Length: 447
Image (cartoon, rainbow, N blue to C red; front, side, top):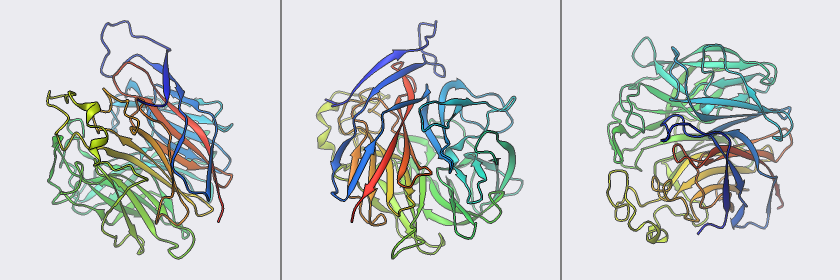
């Protein structure tokens, strides 16, 4: 059913007969994905470089692209994290660096007896050249309503990292014990996610998702997990301390997850210069909110749909999933939680030209997409806006009908309107292969 072909090349095998939960065979996926424009704007032209293997075994990538052209990519790999005092993902994280546009990659070493920084929280190069890398996990501080986290810095273009340094958080009303994670595991953390913005005065903004007073609605597909909210944080001292500015979005009636996996963008030109946009996952449709008050107040979170990709248009994939059962043995067809689509892990970058580029994944359906990934709408996407995000008039499907976790990341490099995009192929336990790929992206626009 898919128009794209993927073949698999084994690089290493496990001697055991069964695939271990945390150590499946490491297989590199030989990718043959051809971007397809599904909504065309004649004012927009997007050109892609060839697919480049970035991390063998890597899933769910994060990205930094520096002013000198250094690309830093991090993904989770099928190895245990090391025992450590600081909370870490159950998957180890691998960081690689390219200084030649993504052609060659070098593994960045972990610190002695440590897991290093998990930059799902975001990494930023400040205007003065300093790189800040935030660890995603925030845990309870010494007093109620406070949190602590870890920060790393680099002054030499990620040739070395200093840290970890302590980050402190003022988070009135936060509940670190409010929920399990999405796998049902005990969790006592909140998550920084995706992007740090530096305002003209040097103030930093970022987002956190987690649970605060009143966030008690269970997620329907994981009852031990409660629906999240997204909040905005502000730092006036380059990330050492963060204050809660306010809630971006919270509503227990929306989606299957509430609001999570946020990303920020700041409009740099035109009528709404200074407006902050936040795109968020809900477990079903993507929602978006904006603020013209530096995050103190926000619009109601509205649905953001790209092209004709409506996550509720289930008639487009019903026949393919007739007879398929979920992990509890129940039919997927007819289940309103399982049969929708789901937008995951949006990324958003405002180019120096003012053009906006978004990337995201569409799961058809949210969980049955892994045992049966072949629906042609299932995949990763890229979208371009030339009107400050009011409309997204040029949409490209990057992968179609192939196995992926649907996580992407995109960053602009030192040349204006030239970006690097990373995405993954494969999944956690299929044994069919998994890796992170990347490719260059050049965006040209005419009025």
